[in-house]
Image (cartoon, rainbow, N blue to C red; front, side, top):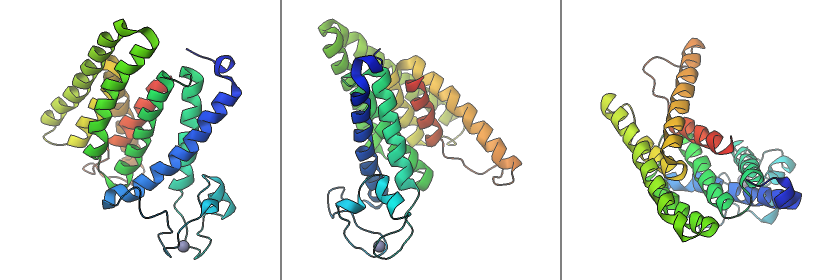
Length: 253
Ligand SMILES: [Zn+2]
């Protein structure tokens, strides 16, 4: 484990800066993936007036603050999700760098965190978790875990790391799959694959702990919602945001 002394304040700041830019890209993905639009074209534009946005409109967090949350050209209010995702990703990357160093373990977990942030937003806003993220995420968890082990502890570390990741994938996906059967579809396929992906990164104890934490948090939020009169007993609550948050907390604590 590395501390600030090892990677330095500059390293933490660099990680935060990469996090800001990554958060900005995650916002773009969250806007375009549900509509099946290309991530590369066209250039970023205002959803209201269609004006292409320049460098000054795309500075993470800062542009939002300077323009008081409105489009400079047509005055349309921009979603709070933009600066929130950018700031959260920057904070996560800085904390991961502090705890795990910059590479290779820190970089692997930063990719994991970026995927979780995007899944959190997509499930909260649209109620779905795309295979386009969870299936490559599983491969990244297993393959990346093997690569990190190779770089940090040599060839001997690869097999145990890959085995651990595969076991985590099975435990995570398998446990939610059983819950899906028991609840007769109350748990979505997207959640099953998401916990499989989380297990591929965190191993089987991590996957089960994340499931437990997410179920507990989900029940508490659901009960609070019912008590406050904002939810009814049969209302579905997306589980992805709880799984993502629990996985991020597991990585950081
Ligand atoms: Zn506009």
